[in-house]
Length: 367
Image (cartoon, rainbow, N blue to C red; front, side):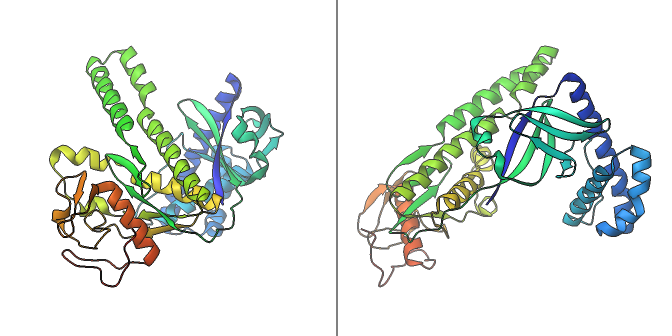
């Protein structure tokens, strides 16, 4: 498996200025190349190279390999949507390959700039040090809040998937980010409280409009997203570890397109559209592959309305968001926990989609 490793650079003030100038010139060249690409309606790198290589080198002063990287970046961007002309921010990423980037052990990296090669210190944590020898291919130089990072691609070994002895069902939600079929719930309360607190603070700072308020706003940028990402990392790590320790597979709901299918009250729209279920699913998926844990995706329809005891399906089985009570046999429990059990059951027996008021004939109960 390939993963992205973020490596922080520690350039001197002079080197920082050189990198900024190189980044600006590189992206100016990309915008110039984009004019030609869009005019020719071609993403053929060989043909574009013949047309723009020497003019770009003369006009922007880029090295040979930086010019080739700029052509490649524009062509790859244009391939994604040929109906519009690509546009690049002047602080957009520079693509470095092995010809213009070399690692000097664990302490420094050599990068090409407009002024030639510069050897720049890197700041590595234990996590990065343990993976630096696995770097493969090119790396992107990015600028985030005035700090330069190299986004390097590293190769991570995957364990061979084992033959599971059961399934850990996981119900994804807004109030509880994840509830598994063992009954363990992971609340979203901390994320919600953090978002509300920061949004309130941002609103007060925006109303002030002073220079210090704007500086404070800049510091707050992305804090909620980073906190949410950390929480989802922790949850996914626990789920994968639990499944691996018990030799079970993980069953998740396939929630793609759910925002288009679901209708909610106006007061709940913000919660629905800030619900980042895709991030948790991605984390579980890639961590499970590394650990060799099989992951199964099932249809989410009626998982919280189906009785795991008798198989009766009805909207009336869920009188409230948190409560489940079967209208047929009286089986009751927390709705999210019931949904997780049904997800695990559906994954194990490859259960077809059931409609309301139907009975699952000939299928064993998970209890």
